[in-house]
Image 1: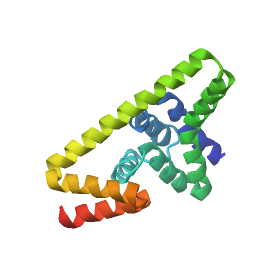
Image 2 (image 1 turned 60 degrees about the vertical axis):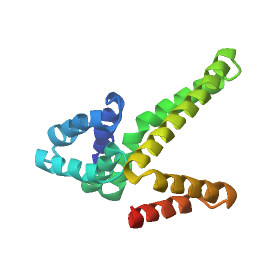
Image 3 (image 1 turned 180 degrees about the horizontal axis):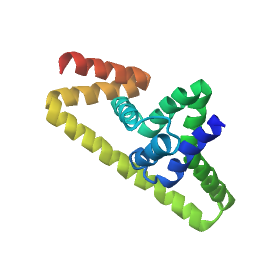
Image 4 (image 1 turned 90 degrees about the vertical axis):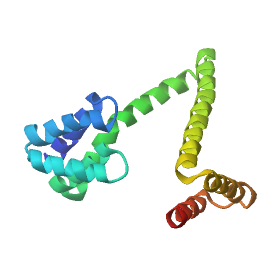
Length: 175
């Protein structure tokens, strides 16, 4: 029964907590502290602080930790699945609808309009990264990192993970 309760404690906030982790935190707190009484407010606050200190989505980190504390490894798996299940279900349903109407001219037009939108968003993100790097690291470091990354990726076909590690090392030691 504990696994069912863990599932409900994280599935319900995932459904009604529109907007990702931060809006669902009070809902998770209600389930964990008030409804099931698995933690005190102080323990929940410590869990939230720990989750904020680590990289990644806050709701999944909290689900994994709380699930593990309550039900061990299976509890962590159940809580994590319950956290991502609402998004997964919606994605599967929407993909089913999209595939059903994939030959529709409206759907083709809609999906065709998504590609340029994503391209514009990526260009804007790159521009913000470059201007931020320019302001913090300076013009010459930024240009060197851009040029060397481009050459490593395009000319010498170095794997992007190695380029990222090299640029992080450059920043750690020289900036």
